[in-house]
Image 1 (tube, rainbow, N blue to C red):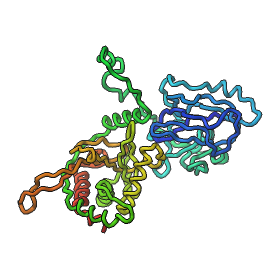
Image 2: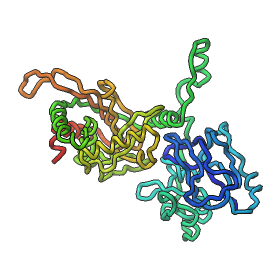
Image 3: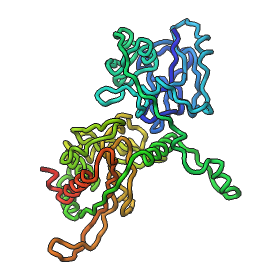
Image 4: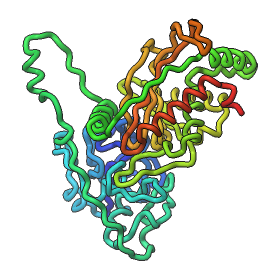
Length: 425
């Protein structure tokens, strides 16, 4: 039987993608796990694997096609010798100008954070389009099925012999697009600058996603802000001593490494703040999974360091360098930038004294870190001295963390950074 190969959701925020390159041609025989195509998502260019075997009967979307919506047919695969004319006619190639209409049931399985996405232990459930269709026909709950496909994805074989059971009723997804529109339209802006010399720069997938998610976050998340100045002199002295000791191993710790560690430990000290917003509830975590914003060409990534409270400073430094390097090369896998309960955005290395960061949902908070600068401060003895002071702002989701709890969290971060040796105890 001919099977439609649908545009996959290769990242949690992907709603459309660019079919960058086909790695197969019509008439090729493919097996499960074979590479079919390279697809540019909102975050990176990723390889797309086959999950069913067969012969490529028809390629419906040409290389370089942009704006291909998730779950639209891009190719037809069938059995050798099978007449796939009818299947091809029933699945016309999508166009970039097609209306941005979101598929109701199938997309919610693969795209996060749609409210109707199946969940298992708080994680999204991945399944192939064919497996989703079979599950829907049989009334199966995908969250109760173990996947045997690549990276644990549920495939056809997993659902064929499963026992039918009622699937959980999903809430209707919130309408997107119109509610988030704000400001003048494109035509209105172009008219404002009629006659002026300018260059139009098209938005890539990453920039579109950043714009949509952060607009939604700023409009829907009730932010409040807490600020503390942190003295860094003891930390800088301690860091210098450690780096001399670690020099033979080729390890050089940054201030950011200490900040990650300080935040991870603070989330353990104030466990009620180690939480995220999940629509009609909060999820409180035992481990400190800390996301760190990394600037890349055309946008930003927030790779997540899991179990950061358990890692040594040198391990944190090595992992952060690896994640940041692969983020800039567009080689991060989705699981490496999904999750976390807390984020750090450090613009101190750019000379920024202080700023307010926007929370990246569903995180409960994000710490904005400014530069360490020399300032006069009044010591405990009343004497004025010069100290290296770093300004920090904690942006907090009031649905998850109240004022006093947020203050305790920021105070714990400050205490860890001003007493760096204690973080090694």
